Image (cartoon, rainbow, N blue to C red; front, top):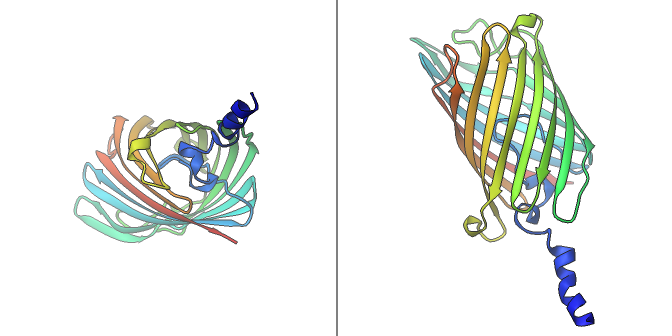
Length: 261
């Protein structure tokens, strides 16, 4: 009987350290396109560089966005997004330059851990500063301050990750406010995971409702790879509900790394 219990004990103690839970929380799967879920340990710095290309009906847009997130507390983080447009095109017009900066705060009000799963609920607020140019053609910025508030709720197990995240982007002109409804999930694929890495297939749905123009909805399948220190993710977005002038498709790439002081 004692021998049987001793054999079973490692399963109890270490059974959750598999799949998505075999890497630290900072490098477990997070969305490629959807907002939030940037909560890290106190004192940890997470650096990320993402690139986006969007094919538009009359041109294209490209963006490179460095991101730095600092874990102020185990449940509170500060992030700074500093996006730049290498090239924008609309008809015969071209432009480039820095886009609007974003300063974001995120607080995890709920994050219990169980033997084989973790839950997390967060509140996200941010301010977009008009550092881009609204006078360029195409513009690299909105020309005004905008404010965002939203919440996320996520589930993480060795094999599955799922989330939902509603929010609102608020502008001076209320008819231009954006209301976001986002959700997605991923599945850990063990036989495709390199040693000491995890491999997930992810699918996100990102919806936006703007009173003056209506709904738009995109689907973004992606691949997630991460180790104890590094994250890699790439995918492509396609519109399910289109609006006039909306993208034909989008390409995304993201690479991140963890520094612990």
